[in-house]
Length: 390
Ligand SMILES: *Cc1c(COP(=O)(O)O)cnc(C)c1O
Image (cartoon, rainbow, N blue to C red; front, top):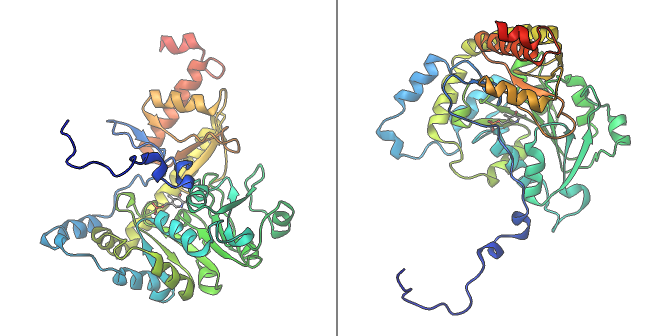
């Protein structure tokens, strides 16, 4: 090694000690696996099994030319206008982000005091358990207090009185409600959500990542109440996970506060082009929602016939308790057949598998493989020797 040309003035710092104590202890969010395996039936991260519309792909391809050297529209103005029109609001009520995940993080930084400068409710990030597992991570990275109330066995939305007795904080600076819920798949009615919103004195974010697969959505609450924000994404329903694009709709004052906190060019240009083209071809996507919902209902019945306990779903995935042996073992058995589903280690849902809805062919493959696994286990249907004979 070459000798450094100058000597340090003092002992060099230990790099670990340069990291804030809070950050040293952080546990990161664990995303679902994204393996690149040929022939894999990938049902683990709730991606849409259908591609973006041909018009979207064309618009994005046509945008790839020498203009890539230019910065994209900094406030995503064109897209915000179109989204405002779609939802019946003003462009000033819409903010676009690098995936809705970016905006969820931005909301924590905008509305919640870190514990060092605030206290109690002003520093509280609140959510139901189970729900989107990113929320506690966002609270932790910000140094905020966490308040969580467990959903019951059936994952139904508790009434405000029930929340009150369970230690819910109606003054929490920020409350996240995943609706329809993930990972349970359960849908919540706008009326029940509104009852909770009207008891909260902080910001409420209704995270509607899966609303397009549900019977109803709560967008009207974001347009009606000053402290309610609805979060949407192009990832799940609009087949654009790869592009990272999501948005919030809420009161102009909240949106402009978020706007001050965001990076100048937080949404990349191709994502804006893709999202705009998506909004010009909504009938294509609505046909896909219908197909996915039909597949969801069909596969739910078929799994139930095999002995799975399938929870009713309003999303593009189902939560199901498999028969015979533990869910974690099912995860591995399915993996051996190159079917990837999601299993969460935390106690509220560790008996379940979360299965994204794929194409009909993919779900037929799932059913066939489940039959094989059950047959081989010998406890259901065919015995081990029967299986060997076939
Ligand atoms: C997938 C998901 C998101 C993230 O969406 P992106 O726009 O891809 O960041 C947010 N909330 C919930 C509940 C999700 O399932």
